[in-house]
Length: 95
Image (tube, rainbow, N blue to C red):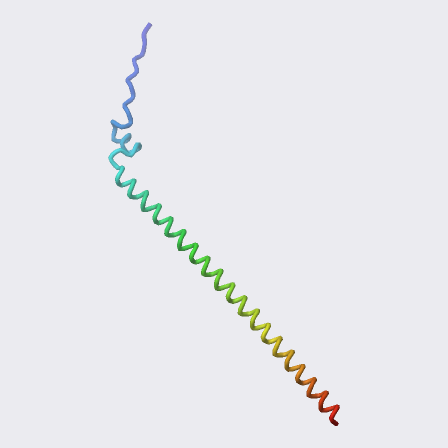
């Protein structure tokens, strides 16, 4: 019987393409770029969180300001109406 002899495939660490795939020889660059990506992602997340918090605080302050203004206007209107009614009653009774 004729048996075909197969050449053993080279280890991925021994070929240039294998070194690129495995990452051998590029570990410092990949580590640095990985750290840079993580730092950039963390900075972006922090900036987004800060922007969201600032927007929420501004909206809450605006809503509270509107509520306070409405309450003050209602109180002033009620006081003016009460004063006018009291003055009219006093004038009518004194007449």
